[in-house]
Length: 99
Image (cartoon, rainbow, N blue to C red; front, top):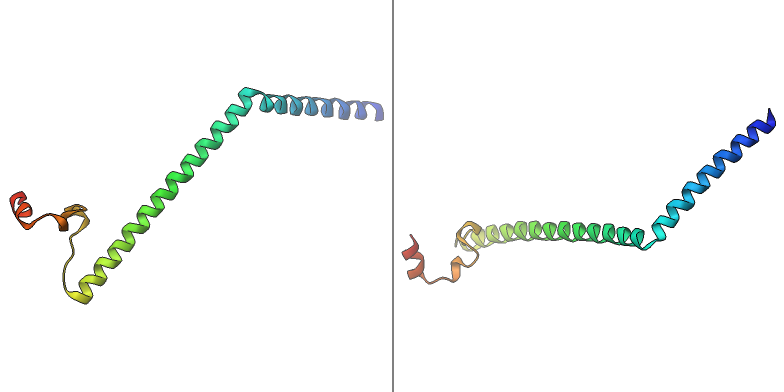
C-alpha cells in the first residue's frame, strides 16, 4: 500500500513539473515574449486612457468651480462650455451673426 501511495505521488509530481516546465518554455519562446509584451502594452494604454479621462474630469470640475467663484464675486457671467471653448474670444459682431 505504501509503495502504491508513493508511486501516485511521484506520478502526480512528474505530471505537474512537466506541465510547469512546458508552460515556462512557451513563455520564454519569441511568440510567448511577444504575447507578454502585447499584453503589457495593452494594459499600459488602458491605464493612460483612464488617467487622461480622470484629468479631463478634474479639469471640468475645477473649471465649474472657478466659473461659480467668478460669478459670485464679480457678478459677471462667464461663457458656458456649451457655447464653445473660444466663445469669449470671438468678436461681438460674429456672435450676433450666429444668432
